[in-house]
Length: 459
Image (cartoon, rainbow, N blue to C red; front, side):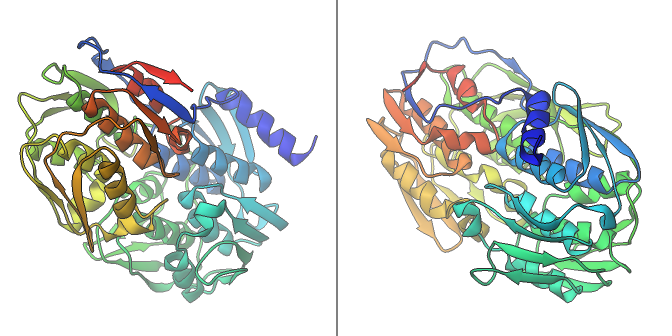
């Protein structure tokens, strides 16, 4: 069998043949309040991606349970299998991965396709830069348009031999692996991914690596490294990682806070929002749950019930309801914005039904995502008749209840698909949504979440 066929057979055994989200749906009028009110969100994509890559570097066999099934995690696993890492399905969404030394990666003249996954591509660049690999990392058209300089340049400062094959600061990038030195590098963007990449690189370098940063962002990588025995020190402005091989680990991936945020937003947009919705076993890391803080500021009642866990992340049940109409709010400050960066389109969608203006600031990072999410969010809101304006670093949404357009062509961005679901629910009428298949990037089952509240017909 070829590497490709072996790879696809392993992934099929792990997840099945894969849920194919329809690309076009018709959304009907909301049903009477009868939606299920006790739900477990899908597994956390960000932790699944980081954990599978960390396991490939560990000093033994790791077991990861409740792995997220989505395009981005599949891209991770395909890359690891192509590199010769031993990946074995051991149950539904459960996998064993046996780590190997950097010198043992099978990567001579290999091209690794990260698909649309920025996390996969940036972390692979960091890991393979310090290995013996001779390979190229690329992605689809959307990913090749996204900035990579914030990873490439710091890695070069540590001694990495990286060559952009087309446009400066973009994929594809050729890697000639070499031992990385320690030192201090700077991340000049408000994003967790470059920091995570440099922490992975630093754990395999010859000396400690100090990463200075502009903003405190999600810290899944730091937590996983410490939990597996790699020393990571942190201050407000910097992180220092010491070289070390991770210990083998057994990890239960918690529920995805972004998936929980979608369910909460749909519930708050539905006629039965006064009832309590319980979201089970959700990752409760405060650097990922800013959306719930924002919803509280809009008048939603949200209770957090901590649960016992032996993993690196806090876990809790979240109980959500709206005792009255939502209110406009202001979202600002790097820490809050970073903790809700993926959910800001959802917040903007809900803001159309609030009783006052909503202002989102300090979110210029949105312009460098799968799409320019400031521009695409504004366009989506206007498709539904909402009144919204872009600013240099965010957007302003005026209260105006959405109306149902006959058809909306969605951008190729899963976060905008989720916002469109909320707008379709709020508008209360018949709407066709085209481009829904982008949801599979992070959550192939998102259409089923929408169908809890409204009739959905695949077209």
